[in-house]
Length: 139
Image (cartoon, rainbow, N blue to C red; front, side, top):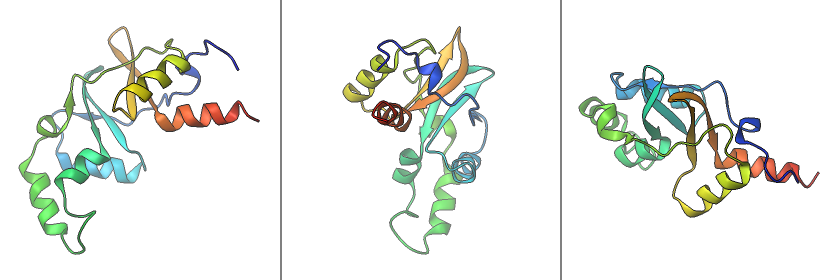
C-alpha cells in the first residue's frame, strides 16, 4: 500500500456545485439528477458552504411519508440555501494523503469534503472514495 498517496488520485474532479443565490429546489434537483449526496455551495470559485442529501431529508417529509410532495415544496420554497447549508465547511487540499483523509473521516462527522487549492474548488472527496481505494489495495 502506498503510504502517502494524495487524495487527488481518488477525488471527483468534475464537481456539481450550486450558488448561494440559487433556489433550494435547484439544489435538490441537482442532487437527484446527478445521483450525488453532497453539493458544494460556491461564490465564484470559493467554497462558502456544503449541502448534503441528509440536510435536505431533515427538512422534508418525502422520505418519511407518501404523498407529502406539496409540503416538501412549501418547505423548500420557504428556506434559502444559506439557511440550510453548512457554512465555511472543513476543506482539504489535493495533496492531503488518503490516510490523513481517512483519519479525518473516522474522527469527524463528515462524509464528504471539498478539495480546495489556493482558495479554489478543485474537487470533492467522499467516504465512499476512501473505502473504494482501500478495497483496491486487497486486489
